[in-house]
Image (cartoon, rainbow over all chains, first blue to last red; front, side, top):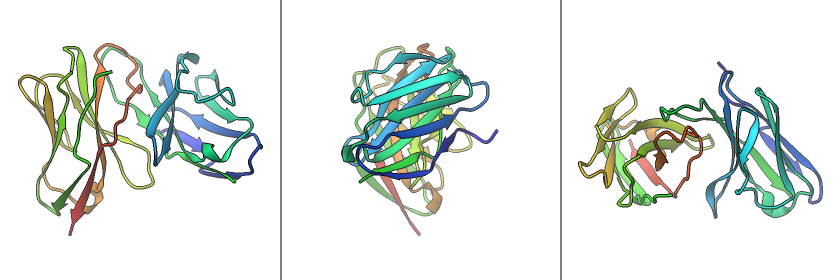
Length: 115
Length: 113
Protein backbone atom coordinates (compact mmCIF):
# COMPACT_ATOMS: atom_id res chain seq x y z
CA UNK A 1 0.00 0.00 0.00
CA UNK A 2 1.24 3.49 -0.79
CA UNK A 3 0.17 4.80 2.59
CA UNK A 4 -2.00 7.84 3.21
CA UNK A 5 -1.77 10.12 0.22
CA UNK A 6 -2.32 13.86 0.50
CA UNK A 7 -2.46 16.44 -2.23
CA UNK A 8 -1.20 18.94 -2.95
CA UNK A 9 2.04 18.81 -0.97
CA UNK A 10 2.35 22.58 -1.07
CA UNK A 11 -0.28 25.23 -1.64
CA UNK A 12 0.18 28.98 -1.80
CA UNK A 13 -2.96 31.05 -2.08
CA UNK A 14 -4.14 34.57 -1.60
CA UNK A 15 -6.25 35.65 1.31
CA UNK A 16 -9.93 35.24 0.55
CA UNK A 17 -9.49 32.37 -1.88
CA UNK A 18 -10.98 28.93 -1.40
CA UNK A 19 -8.54 26.13 -0.63
CA UNK A 20 -9.25 22.41 -0.89
CA UNK A 21 -6.95 19.80 0.60
CA UNK A 22 -7.33 16.19 -0.38
CA UNK A 23 -6.65 12.89 1.32
CA UNK A 24 -6.75 9.26 0.25
CA UNK A 25 -6.64 6.93 3.28
CA UNK A 26 -5.12 3.47 3.35
CA UNK A 27 -7.40 0.95 1.71
CA UNK A 28 -9.47 -0.91 4.28
CA UNK A 29 -9.13 1.70 6.99
CA UNK A 30 -12.42 2.99 8.31
CA UNK A 31 -11.34 5.97 10.40
CA UNK A 32 -9.93 9.19 9.00
CA UNK A 33 -8.51 12.18 10.86
CA UNK A 34 -7.51 15.70 9.89
CA UNK A 35 -4.82 17.48 11.91
CA UNK A 36 -3.21 20.90 11.71
CA UNK A 37 0.32 21.72 12.86
CA UNK A 38 1.69 25.17 13.63
CA UNK A 39 4.70 26.31 15.60
CA UNK A 40 2.51 28.04 18.15
CA UNK A 41 -0.10 25.34 18.75
CA UNK A 42 1.62 22.13 17.73
CA UNK A 43 -0.47 19.28 16.32
CA UNK A 44 -4.22 19.72 16.73
CA UNK A 45 -7.01 17.35 15.78
CA UNK A 46 -9.56 19.15 13.63
CA UNK A 47 -12.13 16.49 12.78
CA UNK A 48 -12.46 12.75 12.40
CA UNK A 49 -14.70 10.33 10.55
CA UNK A 50 -15.73 6.75 11.24
CA UNK A 51 -17.12 4.84 8.25
CA UNK A 52 -17.34 8.12 6.29
CA UNK A 53 -19.48 9.78 8.97
CA UNK A 54 -18.13 12.83 10.83
CA UNK A 55 -17.97 11.98 14.52
CA UNK A 56 -16.31 14.93 16.19
CA UNK A 57 -15.62 18.29 14.54
CA UNK A 58 -15.05 20.20 17.77
CA UNK A 59 -11.51 20.97 16.69
CA UNK A 60 -12.55 22.80 13.54
CA UNK A 61 -11.58 26.40 14.25
CA UNK A 62 -14.36 28.25 12.44
CA UNK A 63 -17.23 27.90 10.02
CA UNK A 64 -14.76 28.74 7.27
CA UNK A 65 -13.48 25.19 7.65
CA UNK A 66 -15.45 22.21 6.37
CA UNK A 67 -14.59 18.57 5.75
CA UNK A 68 -16.28 15.85 3.77
CA UNK A 69 -15.79 12.17 3.19
CA UNK A 70 -17.99 11.15 0.27
CA UNK A 71 -16.63 7.60 0.21
CA UNK A 72 -14.18 5.34 1.99
CA UNK A 73 -11.27 6.30 -0.22
CA UNK A 74 -11.44 10.07 -0.31
CA UNK A 75 -11.76 13.06 1.98
CA UNK A 76 -11.45 16.82 1.57
CA UNK A 77 -10.78 19.69 3.92
CA UNK A 78 -11.95 23.02 2.57
CA UNK A 79 -11.22 26.53 3.81
CA UNK A 80 -13.39 29.29 2.42
CA UNK A 81 -12.39 32.08 2.60
CA UNK A 82 -8.78 31.48 3.58
CA UNK A 83 -6.88 33.82 5.91
CA UNK A 84 -3.15 34.22 6.63
CA UNK A 85 -3.60 32.65 10.08
CA UNK A 86 -4.68 29.43 8.36
CA UNK A 87 -1.10 28.96 7.19
CA UNK A 88 0.03 25.62 8.61
CA UNK A 89 0.82 22.04 7.71
CA UNK A 90 -2.32 19.95 7.45
CA UNK A 91 -2.04 16.21 8.02
CA UNK A 92 -4.49 13.46 7.24
CA UNK A 93 -4.32 10.14 9.08
CA UNK A 94 -6.20 6.89 8.83
CA UNK A 95 -6.60 3.84 11.02
CA UNK A 96 -8.59 0.66 11.37
CA UNK A 97 -11.14 1.24 14.06
CA UNK A 98 -11.08 -1.63 16.51
CA UNK A 99 -10.88 -2.36 20.21
CA UNK A 100 -7.23 -3.26 19.92
CA UNK A 101 -5.79 0.24 19.86
CA UNK A 102 -3.88 -0.19 16.65
CA UNK A 103 -1.73 2.48 15.12
CA UNK A 104 -2.67 5.48 13.03
CA UNK A 105 -0.89 6.20 9.76
CA UNK A 106 -0.19 9.77 8.73
CA UNK A 107 0.27 11.30 5.32
CA UNK A 108 3.16 13.56 4.37
CA UNK A 109 1.05 16.65 4.92
CA UNK A 110 0.05 19.68 2.89
CA UNK A 111 1.93 22.87 3.65
CA UNK A 112 -0.52 25.74 3.20
CA UNK A 113 0.62 29.33 2.91
CA UNK A 114 -1.99 32.07 2.73
CA UNK A 115 -0.59 35.45 1.69
CA UNK B 1 -7.94 13.60 28.56
CA UNK B 2 -5.06 12.50 30.74
CA UNK B 3 -1.95 14.60 30.32
CA UNK B 4 1.65 13.57 29.69
CA UNK B 5 4.83 15.44 30.60
CA UNK B 6 8.06 15.08 28.62
CA UNK B 7 11.37 16.95 28.63
CA UNK B 8 11.54 19.53 25.86
CA UNK B 9 14.79 18.20 24.44
CA UNK B 10 17.45 15.53 24.82
CA UNK B 11 20.78 14.78 23.22
CA UNK B 12 22.39 11.49 22.43
CA UNK B 13 25.50 10.21 20.73
CA UNK B 14 25.19 8.01 17.70
CA UNK B 15 25.15 4.27 18.41
CA UNK B 16 24.42 4.79 22.09
CA UNK B 17 21.15 3.89 23.82
CA UNK B 18 18.58 6.61 24.43
CA UNK B 19 16.00 6.65 27.20
CA UNK B 20 13.13 9.05 26.61
CA UNK B 21 10.99 9.55 29.73
CA UNK B 22 7.29 10.36 29.99
CA UNK B 23 5.26 11.10 33.10
CA UNK B 24 1.53 10.43 33.11
CA UNK B 25 0.54 10.50 36.74
CA UNK B 26 -3.20 10.88 35.98
CA UNK B 27 -3.35 7.84 33.69
CA UNK B 28 -6.51 5.78 34.05
CA UNK B 29 -6.63 2.02 34.19
CA UNK B 30 -7.91 1.81 30.63
CA UNK B 31 -5.40 4.13 28.96
CA UNK B 32 -2.87 2.76 26.51
CA UNK B 33 0.51 4.50 26.28
CA UNK B 34 1.41 5.33 22.68
CA UNK B 35 4.62 6.74 21.27
CA UNK B 36 4.84 8.48 17.94
CA UNK B 37 7.72 10.35 16.39
CA UNK B 38 7.93 13.03 13.75
CA UNK B 39 10.98 13.26 11.55
CA UNK B 40 11.75 16.65 9.99
CA UNK B 41 9.28 17.62 7.27
CA UNK B 42 7.26 14.41 7.68
CA UNK B 43 4.05 13.32 9.28
CA UNK B 44 4.07 11.58 12.64
CA UNK B 45 4.78 7.87 12.60
CA UNK B 46 3.87 5.21 15.08
CA UNK B 47 6.68 3.81 17.22
CA UNK B 48 5.19 1.55 19.87
CA UNK B 49 2.39 1.23 22.39
CA UNK B 50 1.59 -0.73 25.53
CA UNK B 51 -0.83 -1.10 28.40
CA UNK B 52 0.91 -2.66 31.40
CA UNK B 53 3.75 -4.92 30.33
CA UNK B 54 6.98 -3.86 28.69
CA UNK B 55 6.88 -4.08 24.92
CA UNK B 56 9.51 -4.57 22.26
CA UNK B 57 9.40 -4.15 18.51
CA UNK B 58 11.89 -3.63 15.73
CA UNK B 59 12.06 0.10 16.35
CA UNK B 60 12.19 0.42 20.12
CA UNK B 61 11.28 -0.87 23.56
CA UNK B 62 8.71 0.55 25.93
CA UNK B 63 9.27 0.21 29.65
CA UNK B 64 6.19 0.90 31.77
CA UNK B 65 6.46 1.58 35.50
CA UNK B 66 4.63 -0.81 37.77
CA UNK B 67 2.20 1.92 38.87
CA UNK B 68 1.89 3.04 35.23
CA UNK B 69 2.47 6.65 36.17
CA UNK B 70 5.52 6.86 33.96
CA UNK B 71 7.07 5.13 30.99
CA UNK B 72 10.32 5.19 29.05
CA UNK B 73 10.89 4.77 25.35
CA UNK B 74 14.21 3.07 24.71
CA UNK B 75 16.10 3.32 21.45
CA UNK B 76 18.80 0.71 21.79
CA UNK B 77 21.30 2.23 19.38
CA UNK B 78 20.54 5.73 18.21
CA UNK B 79 21.27 6.61 14.62
CA UNK B 80 21.26 10.01 12.95
CA UNK B 81 17.95 9.05 11.40
CA UNK B 82 16.39 8.84 14.88
CA UNK B 83 16.64 12.61 15.30
CA UNK B 84 13.00 13.60 15.63
CA UNK B 85 10.32 14.87 17.96
CA UNK B 86 9.01 12.02 20.11
CA UNK B 87 5.47 12.20 21.44
CA UNK B 88 4.09 10.21 24.37
CA UNK B 89 0.29 9.99 24.13
CA UNK B 90 -2.42 8.32 26.18
CA UNK B 91 -5.31 6.70 24.34
CA UNK B 92 -8.31 5.08 26.02
CA UNK B 93 -8.51 1.32 25.62
CA UNK B 94 -11.32 0.13 23.47
CA UNK B 95 -12.21 3.57 22.20
CA UNK B 96 -11.55 2.30 18.72
CA UNK B 97 -10.56 5.75 17.60
CA UNK B 98 -6.86 5.08 17.58
CA UNK B 99 -6.11 8.08 15.41
CA UNK B 100 -7.77 10.44 17.85
CA UNK B 101 -4.50 11.51 19.40
CA UNK B 102 -3.87 14.44 21.70
CA UNK B 103 -0.33 15.58 20.97
CA UNK B 104 1.72 17.51 23.50
CA UNK B 105 4.94 19.33 22.73
CA UNK B 106 7.02 16.15 22.74
CA UNK B 107 10.75 15.69 23.20
CA UNK B 108 13.11 16.86 20.49
CA UNK B 109 15.91 14.32 20.24
CA UNK B 110 19.23 15.39 18.78
CA UNK B 111 21.69 12.67 17.80
CA UNK B 112 25.32 13.67 17.51
CA UNK B 113 27.71 11.77 15.26
